Length: 150
Image 1 (spheres, one colour):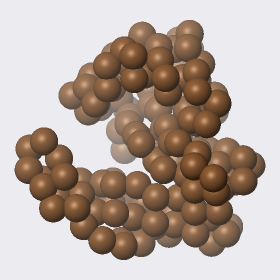
Image 2 (cartoon, rainbow, N blue to C red):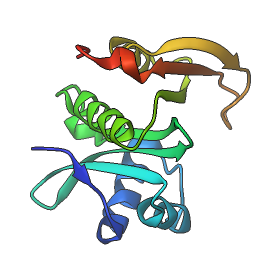
Image 3 (cartoon, rainbow, N blue to C red):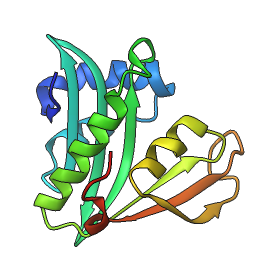
């Protein structure tokens, strides 16, 4: 399986994966925007026609803001998150990004470990960022430092 660019033909699969893996971050219209706006990068990983994971981000000048990285719960711990993150960061580099940033739930140890393997560093915390009151860590990566990372 190789990561690939998602398009609007994957809309229903993105919504279903979002629901099963995150509880539904976005609705149909937000997903449609993600898949059609050229400033937004959306990478997928599929086995035949089953979407196993997604990684999306917004390009703003020379910065990639990662908005979602999600893997189907039944396919986690198989390296899919790392493959998707790597593909998204590589695509951002090709599009002129020099930095990447994201927010991650401060209690999501597996995600934090993945981001740190890629060189993301914590730059701050947003207290009460999530609807459940949880804090978000703000992570940054200088993309020039990505060479040689997992």
